[in-house]
Image (cartoon, rainbow, N blue to C red; front, side):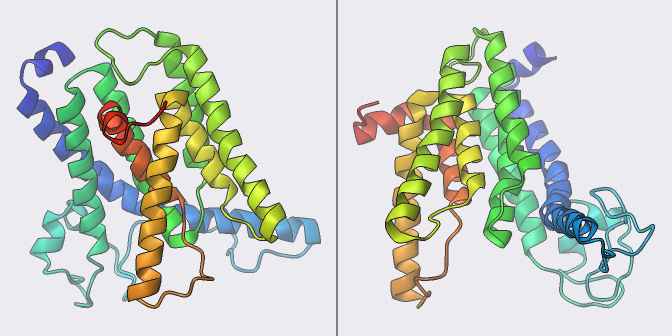
Length: 294
């Protein structure tokens, strides 16, 4: 199948785009529900330790990525299957609930379309190959990681830790024919995961000892470890420089032009994820342009 699609690159890109639109609809569910599931689990554990009932979780109610069915946040009407068609259903409904006519956030179709475009770009860059499929998988993980951290200042272990292990496992198939970025040597993957975690962990503690404040969350360590496992240690410096420069520039711009309080933290995960994704696609070119030492 991959061999046949490799001879039809634009067909493969179109299929990847359509597939990612559907997955993007599910990622909207992940972005919204996973943090709530985590909070409920934390409260349940705390209640168990305190020997008090978990007051916000009705007994017998199931809440996960599958149930209950999606509903309108305004009127609670259950959303039909055709109303979940990525992007198109939003346009057909005019951006409003079919029942109560309240506005629906444009963020849902934006996430769906952005997911489709990101995966399509990956399909175009790597083509129909095992490397292309794994690059798409990484992309589909980075989208909810980015959005959840942006919303909640939180990077779920249930998303980032599998990335670490998948990246390490992929190195067992080195060398993969035709792979020039992924499926790196086991040595590079292991060192990449270790160096990714320890570099930000070290910065965290140096910053905390110097200022008494936490400069970033522990999820950032794990995310960079995952990127190191997938891409190798040689790209870590590129990822850190790109994410730090863009993050600092955006933060300064928001303070100067939007009056953002400098004491309000800014999530670092989205910048790491974006820098890692761009490095996966064009890392060697970026290193050449910036004349990075390694």
